[in-house]
Image 1 (cartoon, one colour):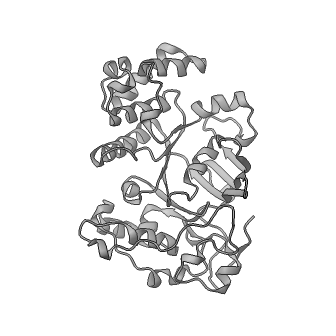
Image 2 (cartoon, one colour):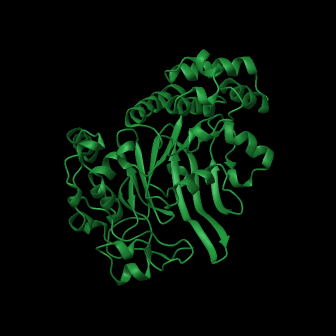
Image 3 (cartoon, one colour):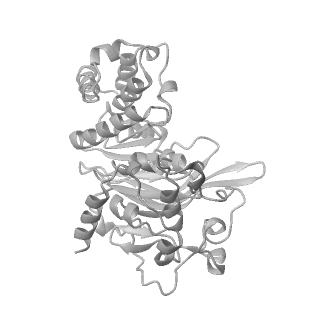
Length: 378
């Protein structure tokens, strides 16, 4: 466990956007507490999720952003208790169905229960549609196999599959009769999204779903996801290293660093008024078409080794605000506003220490967001 500590004199309360009481979150669909994931290695135990807390709300699109190796994919896998062996997962992941059933403790499910849960309650689109389909089966065969395996009515669910494929601007007859190699990368990715939704889950987890696609197809899929969320009452968890990609899509952003979340809040608040030095550094490092290469600002240093865990705040070796307190103690999450939390002793000084400017590539109308944020404060 991390040695979390309260920053003295901040004025923050301990109620945050990621840590809330049961009574305060009637719209919560997933509740993660004290999540740890680790792998035993020859040189020691590698901890790749470190005492993580997170609430996810019904029908929101949550963007999870961080550098490669920060723990994003492990968080995605943990949501379905699908961390690959020999990984060990502990803590609590609780799922709240919307049909009156009791909450489900995901990490306590049997193998048979998990088989149903992973498609019928929470489904996942992994990285790389190119390798997700069996090349010897038609796309339709994949749909039929999934439906039959889960004991659902084949005709009605295939009708649903056709509707999903059409909603993703594909020709159902062509796609279902095709083999994977007969479809483009963008078509395969959209077919994979449709397949993940064919059993009508409430939550869709997407791990770098557009990484191998061109910019035009990335934008197209973003637009489709927003439509799917509204039409099918989905909760979407969109995991990416690409902050500009999700900036115009998500309702809420959570920033992960060194296997734990360091900041979470509404999209507007995090983008316009980021409170953690790491988040601000990420925003400062976003490339602009107008910025010369020699003026770009990469984040200096490297992420911590998951085996050789640092004491204190894991970001302190790279942080311009770090002092002895940061070296000795790891700050807990504290509220910046009702739905914006940060794990930093010096969040009130971060703006001056790590300035940034939103560029057009973030695809955000800055004036609109500022207006929304100002209205929210009134």
